Amino acid sequence: MSRPAHKRPEYHKINKDLFVLTYGALVAQLCKDYEKDEDVNRYLDKMGYGIGTRLVEDFLARSCVRRCHSYSEIIDIIAQVAFKMYLGITPSVVCHNSSRNEFSLILDKNPLAEFVEELPAGRSALCYCNLLCGVIRGALEMVHLAADVTFLQDRLKGDSVTEIGITFLKKLDEKKYRRKK
Image (tube, rainbow, N blue to C red; front, side, top):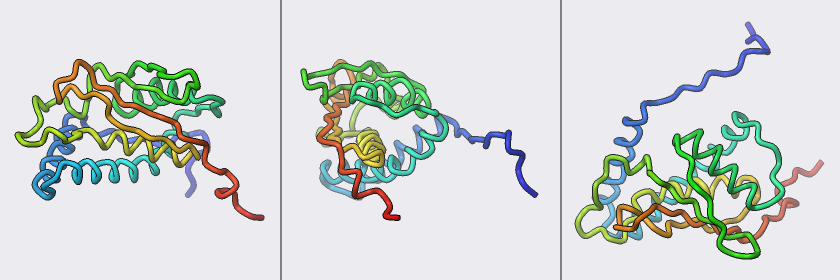
């Protein structure tokens, strides 16, 4: 039996609070497993990267966005569509240089840190939401864009805002990814 052609696939959503609490438990367990904050940050980034490489397919299928022609278009899509679709927020975008390849996403509220009041004692170098950096970096790489993605400011560390910095390094060589016929 085949599915009707006109019916769109159903997407299941999980409870936001359950997701945020599960993420908190994951970070807490990583803090127990690794002594150094840098190791926890690296692991969260690696996990996020893996998620981003897979999530980009879902994003492109569900959002129906067209091909972007500039870095600023890409950042706008990330902020206005992707963040809204997956996290329910829309960060503001700031460009940092005249070559228009360095941007910041300013998050007024960070859903992953919703139930976190402060970082654990002795964990001042922990980037609690470093998973987001990995997700963005992994998704961009899958569409052949190399980028450096880091947390520049974090409310959990006492900053006034949460800011993710994205620097586009160079466009990856598309010839490597084309299939030979």
